[in-house]
Image (cartoon, rainbow, N blue to C red; front, top):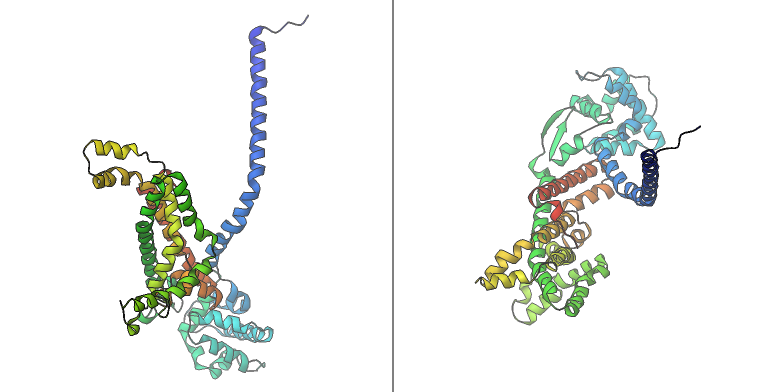
Length: 419
């Protein structure tokens, strides 16, 4: 005869069943949430993370020359860099150059080498053209007879380094240094040091644009937060209006306003403030970049400030006034400290957007208003030096991450309010 379970045993059994059911329900909710998040995760990976990882890899992984000159890469890998390479390395390079000439890739190889060895393009093209026919002479003798530059040990050391698939030369170039031969690092000549100056100019423009946006956006945000709702909503539409207008149209409008024969100079001349011969040069320089970028990025400062100011109770100011504080003192010591999260968030957002801007500096900046992003675009589109462009982009990304870390240490990400 079976024993009937006691009441405590029944309670334990029911609790165990409830725990199992809750665990199953939790797993189903997690699976459902994961299924809903998967499309967004895939989108972020494909459009954001994958390009960044590719960029990071491109800055140190450069297999193009080794693919075009595979035999030469293998031959130079075995060379100990004592004197000139042995005859097999010369034969391998000459054979690869003849093959590259036949399949039309010699120009790309010459360009890749010419990035770091000035004049190498003509050297490769000439040698591949004049040595295209097989010869009974040794490769070393043939190449030296075509051009004496093949007897330069520094040239061969550079070729050994360039035919390697992994390199840090792009980062060295990004710091205005260069590698001579295989491993000798030295600074670039003074007239060729451009990247450091461009990084400093980019940081300077980013800081100035951020300060200008703060100076112009703080009063506007304060007005929006303190006016009656109906009036503030109308003004908010005016703040958001630039988002509904093409960036290219807004930038082109500033060209019409700021040029020497533009609207602003015409008004100043008509009012007699300046003479017709003394018109201001406000375009195709850093002034044009600052003005146009401040106009474009101003809403990104106003919105975080407004979101913080709207949450500040007006009773704080009234309490300060009741305790005898002057209006300006109350504003400075009571109101402004409460807006620090909005200032930090808006400043961080504007600065990060400013240092990565490309279209506006390209259209209104000229030579003195160009930023590092314009040079990155040049290497991507014109010089096709993608490795150097990737290295410059990586340094810019690291600068943003350092700034983000500093903001977290000083202000705290928990205090960030973007809207």
